[in-house]
Amino acid sequence: MALGYDRLKPIFEYSLFDKNRKLINHMQIPITSIRFLHDFAATENYVILPDLPMELDPKNCTKDNKFIFQLNKDLPARYGLLKRFSKNPDDV
Image 1 (spheres, rainbow, N blue to C red):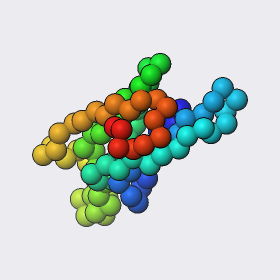
Image 2: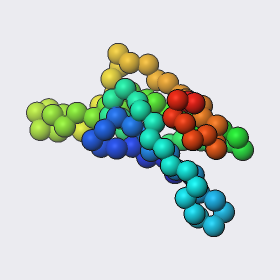
Image 3: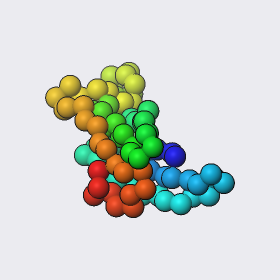
Image 4: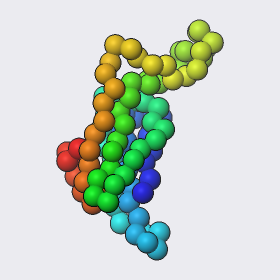
């Protein structure tokens, strides 16, 4: 499995591979904003997707000399559950 994020679009990238490392599923899962996603977890049947409000704002680095991602304390931390072999982003 692989989980990633896009620096230009608010999406998760979820990929599933077989035991021979062949890609068997890839999907883009929409989220509310561009976010820094670091870890995820998986069980035999599910993938647990973090949707934490660590949001991208390039102005942070140029204007305030901060890290490009900042925690938005006004938004909740959420987690999504997805069946491991699902092919539909709406299943989250």
